[in-house]
Every structure is written in C-alpha cells, then in structure tokens.
Image 1 (cartoon, helix red, strand yellow):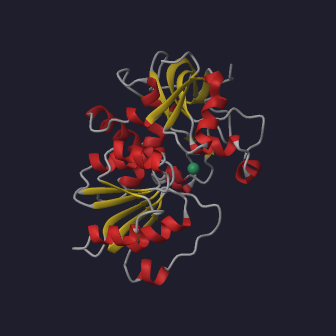
Image 2 (cartoon, rainbow, N blue to C red):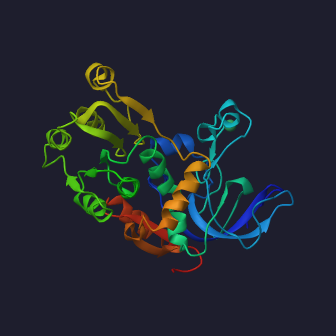
Length: 328
Ligand code: ZN
C-alpha cells in the first residue's frame, strides 16, 4: 500500500492503460536506461475510486471517481505561475519519475485528480489522459472547416482523428505505414487513409487542398523523420504544424522552403494544458461526440500485463487496458 502525505489521495485503481512510454520502459531502451531509476511501478493512465484523503485535501473526497493528470508540477516556477504548468521546469511524471498505476492502489497529489462522472466506464476514464494529448494537439489552433492531416495512427493519432472530426474539421486524412492502425483511424472517422508505402502522400494531400495550396493543419504523431518532411511539404502557406511525435535523433527539415517562406505556424506539444485540456476532454466525452470505445482492443487482468506488452510490440493494437480488480 503506497504511503501518502497530507496533500495526497489514495486511489483504488479500476482500470489502467498501457502507453507507448510504458512500452519504451518495458523494452528497456536507451531512453529508459538513462531516465528510469528502478525499482519503480510503471504506468500512468488510470481511473479509480478515492479511498483515502490527506488532512489538507480539498475539492476531492473519499468515494469520488477520478482519473488524473500525470504530470506533477512544482507550482512555483515561472511557467507554473504564468498559467503554463504543462511545461513546468520541475515536472515529475507518474510511472516515470515516481511510482505509477500498474498496481491496485496509487498515491497522487489531490490537485492532480480529475473527477469523472460514474457513467464513464473506467477503461474510458483512464483513456482521458492520452485523449488529452490528442485534444491538446488538435485544438492548439483552429480546426473547424479546416483540412487536417494526422501522421501516425497509434492510439493518440487515432484519437486525434476523432477529435478533429468532432471539432468540425472539413476533412481528416490519416497517414501511417501500418494498415492495422489505418483501420483504427478509419473506425475513428478518417475521411481518407494513406499509406506512404503505397501512396504518394504529398501529392494526394496537396490535391486535397488544391484551392488553398495544400492542407491547413499538419498533426505529427508518428515520430518518423519522413512524416515530418511529408507533412510540411503538404502544408499550405500559412498552415499550422503541431508536433507531438518524439524522434530518436535530430531531424533535418527544409526550413527555408517548408517553414520560413511558407509562414508556417510551428508548435511543439507536450502533455495537456492544466487543466483546460481536461475540461475540454471531459466535455467532448460527455457530449457523445467522441466514441473512443472502438479503440480499446485488449482487456486483460493486471497480472497478464506481459500479454499486453507483447501484443503492443507487434504494433497491431489499439489501447491495451489492464484491470487490477478483475476485468470489466
Ligand atoms: Zn513548475
């Protein structure tokens, strides 16, 4: 049972989903080796019930049903004090820098809790965290009436497709080299799916936006250098490029032609705005405009975590959800 302080709550976890970050840790890749200090409980996407609350806790109480923001921020740096705590200088991440959610219970600062309506099943409530990444990326600029391309259709990319459709995009194009993932994107509402191994993605996207000289919005969620180049090449003058993907090494891009002379609005995206993105995400779910359930492809008991990770290694998964209290 994790220890908790006066400002913390203890949550009994009902569902916890595996993130790509967890797969990096499970694979013990170079990033994990330098960042993770074992022993550590992994996992950060979860939902459950508050079973204990520290004496200073306000706004959350025992019995509340919560998910949680996974970035624990300092509250006193420049960024935190100016409404930008998603880029806190002292951020600590659940399941990366401190014990996480692949467990029966987790202790978190009460301020990180996000109360959720009981009508939302725990596996969907847990998904609010990665869904928040998608919401933050998609809504970092105008979407309504825009032609939007999403490169990388893993779970967050597929969710971004759904969010863009819900937000009124004129068309959403999904790009991936994995046909299984393109199928997920199609299920989540993509108007056109493109596989760069078969399709001339840049030409097709430019044709789709021919009246404006290209697509309006490029959302990069793949971490592929080729996707960065293709997305920027397909973008119209004055378009928006929002980058959530992370890259294993520096990526060369044509700054002169694809950024400067195009007047591109280029932005890096990390985490979720705290807590605006959570309110928006919750509202989108409550409105019924988003149906994320098709994205949940695997439901496993917590002790069968290895089955989930092995499935994720194939790349042919949506979200893998683990249930510490028995599968729902
Ligand atoms: Zn801070």
